[in-house]
Length: 129
Image (tube, rainbow, N blue to C red; front, top):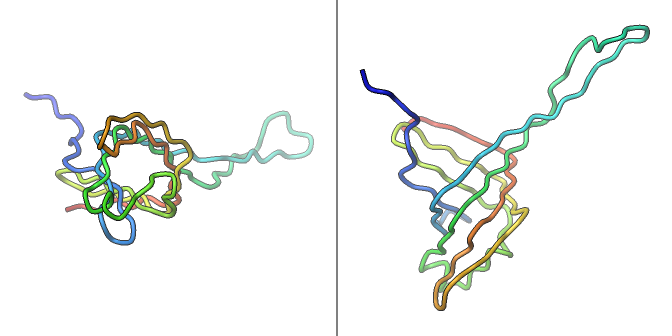
């Protein structure tokens, strides 16, 4: 009996205005839900917890701008309201309404590479393929 793991990603990329602008080597996604505690007068402990808004943070490593995006003069610092698409063998995950929160760059001559970009996304949609 073999051990089954998570399906690995076959394609990870950034998309803006319907076109692929950068490919991504790897990612780490975290969903965080804020919460509020409901307290009642005279009670020593909270009577309930209410879940609030969910935020998605995705750390992307080694982004390479596509040739088309480079010829269009892409600048990762100017990206606004873009999407992150992660294609797996059994499903497709799309983070939309993305904004970058941190960019760390390193590169070589004639290569448009961002070493790491942290992204905050407003929505996450998962579909089967």
